[in-house]
Image 1: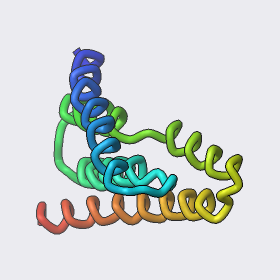
Image 2: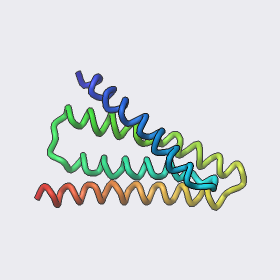
Image 3: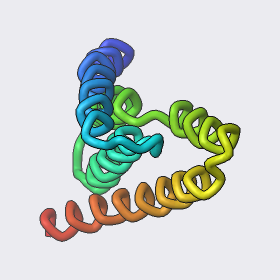
Image 4: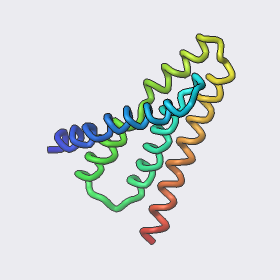
Length: 120
């Protein structure tokens, strides 16, 4: 049952990642991977909130592992950072790495803190 919940969450998270990435990237003419940054930060926010939420293992499997796991993408982040560096855009590569890590940690912390505050 857990594997089915994970697959169900991933079936929603993966297309949402793709559609969000394309929609965000279409609005920017630069080679900076804005779409990947947005989905990773959004996923970190949701995951931080889920960690603090009083939910059972089934909901965690569905949303944290399945949905957030498919929504976020470390492999694409790594590839795009490497591509920027390989293309000579060292500043953009460094900015992507630093921004992604700091914004992801900040979003996860914010999601966690907001959920804890709302749960009282």
